Image 1 (cartoon, rainbow, N blue to C red):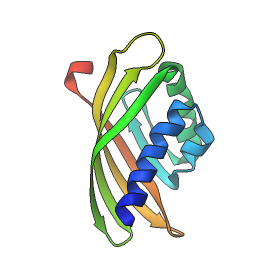
Image 2 (cartoon, rainbow, N blue to C red; image 1 turned 30 degrees about the horizontal axis):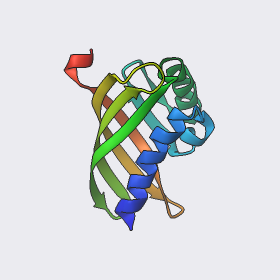
Image 3 (cartoon, rainbow, N blue to C red; image 1 turned 45 degrees about the vertical axis):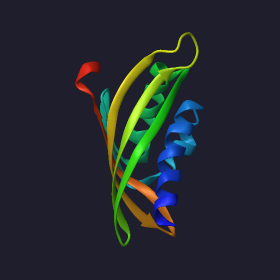
Length: 126
């Protein structure tokens, strides 16, 4: 059951981002979480919300696909690795970016939350 919950958490992040639902996306993170993306770093929910809002200027009309999820679970913590594929969903069918998410998760109140998320963009997209 844990792996299904973790897959759901990671997929919700992508879905909420594509729907420009920043508030729901932020709620997937723990209170003291960190987020490191190509355009910046954030610590805590307020900074994460600001960073995700900034990302929306780049992601409108895009779809984020998360795949090849690998989970290493140890009781109430987990490490995950997942591929990211971003495609244009509005004007053409082209790949915008690929990369790997590296996450540290924590289980609180019977829910998994993202504690640390880092996106490593593939070298061909830098």
